[in-house]
Image (cartoon, rainbow, N blue to C red; front, side):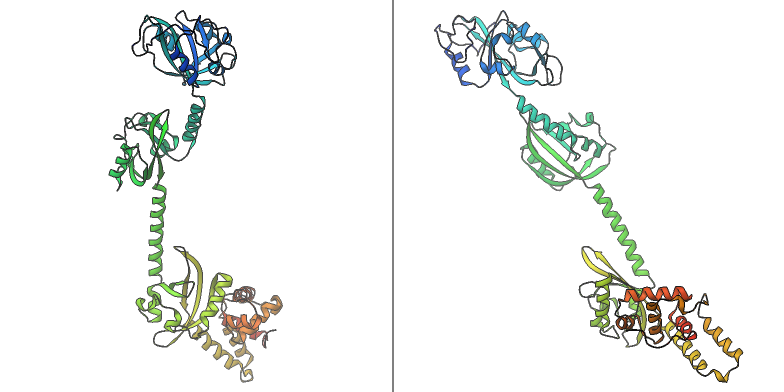
Amino acid sequence: MRQQGQRGTCRLAEVEVPSMQESSPIPELRHRQLQQLITGLDDGVVLVGFDRVILWANERALALHGVKHLDELGSTIEEYRKRFQLTYRNKQPVHREDFPIERAMKGETPRAVTIEVSPVHQPDNPWTHTIRCFVIYDEAGDPEYMVLVIDDETGRFEAEDRFESAFNANPAPALICRLSDLRYVRVNRGFLEMTGFSRDDVVGRSAVELDVFAGSADRDAAVRNLHEGRTVPQTEADLRVANGAGKRVIVAGQPIEISDERCMLFTFADLEPRRRAERALEASEERFAKAFGLSPVASWIWDAADFRFIEANTALVRLTGYAKEQIVGRTPLDLRLWADPLEQRKLGALLEGEGSISGADIRIRVRDGSPVDCLLSAETIDLDGRKCVLCVMQDITERKRSEAELMTAIETVMSETSWFSRTIVEKLAALRSATQHAPSAAGTECLTEKELGVLKLVCEGLSDAEIAERLRLSRHTVRNHLSSVFRKIGVKRRGAAMVWARERGVAGSAAQ
């Protein structure tokens, strides 16, 4: 039972070995090489005879078993196995014939083995030992005893277990590829859920079979870094998934060591949700652009900072007489669009205070200088991180002219009722009421003091802006009061409200 390469020249000489148990049955430790081995290592050392008797152990070996005296290990290997539970890291028991000592006694060259060791009465907190076995020969070349060298791997494997738990629990998809043969040795749940693969579909496959760099613009550089064990920077790739389709991902690689093996940790970010969101956004923007462009109501988008036109639709072009190229990039002041140059400042104050404008009466001048009465509504929006204003404007010039002409005629006729009989006066009153969709018999007592004040100013012909200035209210509040007045008296237009008010003797200036 000789082992070439492990033999040493053994000259009998009495030497003192540190940490020697006083009960050591070895007659004399004569090997200087053995003394140097024991004193130069922090590992545990156990000497075992070929009769399986445990001859001696250093203090480190005892500590690695949680005992203080040699006899607590057991006098023989058989007693040792009765006192300590030996399992592989997969929790399978270490059979007697697989223990390094048994292999050495058969003349085999025992390989290092990593096992978990725990007292049989405390199996839940094992130590992790890597055990190597050497045969010591005497000077005649005959095997004399065996040496077990024990490395404490508990801390390292606990750290690896923590990494394994974190790796598996991490929702971010990840793979681990062994660099020695470029095969995948770990896969987490995140990767399996993203691709639809099972664990058996991935673990054991090569990096060629499951190419994580397919479709990458930097594929050659990424593959070169993988072969050289260097960091793989983030790159976009088309990862093939279980159903055969491609999934766009971002992949990056980081070199790591697992169980003393060099590996590459791949992490992934699924770009499909982002791509779906981008496609949905593009479709939404396309629908908005079509609706915006085809709307029969004049519409445009302003930059909120300076009211510069960002976009304008065809209806605005028709209304103003300016070409789109003349509008976009300029402001209403540049185009002299406002009949009142202060209009823009008033609109800006409303947007700043209220964030929106609803049905504001404004007058603009189109390209040929003609005045146009409009109702303008606006809402602040965010456009690619830029604060903007979406505006719509309806031309009400004809409507206002018709209302004004009707009111003038009625007021003129009724200014002197003495020329008419009671029947004619009643018909004129009925004609005035015809402007109301739902005539109301309510009196002024249904209105609040503020609402009555607003109505009086309407009868004086003031606009919302002028009423707001006169009463020191916001235009939004004036509009709310008018809406309430219209609802209470059953009208929908200012002209009808004026007729209703005149019929009931509402006149004079509102309170300041």
